[in-house]
Amino acid sequence: MTRQRYCDKHQNKEKENQRYYDRFVRDKKADRFYHSKEWQLVREQVLIRDHYLCQHCLKQKRVTKAEMVHHTQPLREHWHLRLVPSNLISLCNACHNQVHGGKKVAGVGPGGESKILGGRFHTPRPTFTQTFFPK
Image 1 (cartoon, helix red, strand yellow):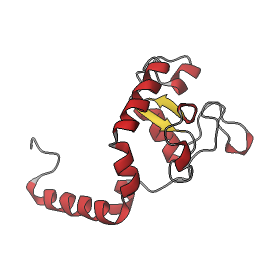
Image 2: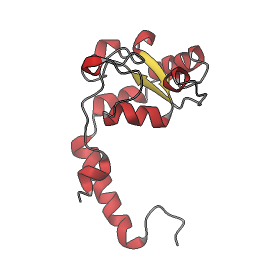
Image 3: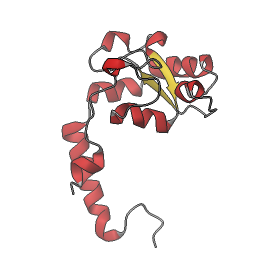
């Protein structure tokens, strides 16, 4: 057992994978944006507006603390909407992962349009694990 995420044998592999991801996959512009003061302020405003509750869960009559603020229109494709509160929604991690995983959730209309999020689901992208640890 170890206190670290990985044993000594696999720790170097994790560092190597993270370096590769940072160098070739990570969107540097988006990374800078998510660390900006402007984003932090708007993010906090949206969480307050939504009472720190996951809006998707509320539609399902569940009360769950929101931990993410999600862009309903993808940041890469709609950069001009990055700080527009009407393009942002508070979500819990599970719902945020569902949206980015492309999984259908209750409230999805014909054509894949989300009645909750007001837009189409994101194109499914492989997860970090799928990318670096294929089966």
